[in-house]
Length: 274
Image (cartoon, rainbow, N blue to C red; front, top):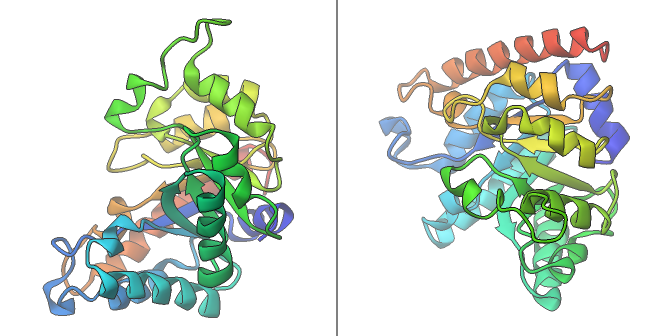
């Protein structure tokens, strides 16, 4: 999915919602007996009309070994086969030396068929650039995250210029790609820090986790981070997929997704995007 297709999808669906497919078997309905694929299919079918993207996190599949990884593959294939207009993000947080990153990129883009992969930039340019250059594919670089430990490194001041480390990372990494093949992760819990991010990345899309269960505010994210093309993909995982652990889990997930989509439509309209 290229940039214009992504923007068109946001306008058409009046949404910038990404549903995180992070199924925790301990929170899934008992009658599914740990079947992540069946759980995902029902969640996807229930929420697809409200979402523009899905983001399966590999850890929730890899923990089940080979069977879990197969269900990850089958989940990606199910979305591609049935909802080809939706962006599929592999939340893998890869990032290694160049030849290893090239293998990761080929694995995700050529074999699995995802549209985007999250990448950790700590090892520098050669850990990120192998993910660039695949037609219609995206690398999503960790920038300013929503977790509690994000300040341990990301908010350190650098000796030269006194800027935050995350600002240096975003500035440098943005020079490796462009607005059509690179996004950045910025956590919803960062609030007004989105203003600082937008000074560095005025046009890049931002993948925004942390709305809902982690306490991030959708309105605050839109106020400080939205561009005239939207420029945001806001993820919600637990708040949608585990809103119920009963037989009505898909119905409840659809209601939660619809609620977020309606809020997003209001924000998009206020910005004049739709």
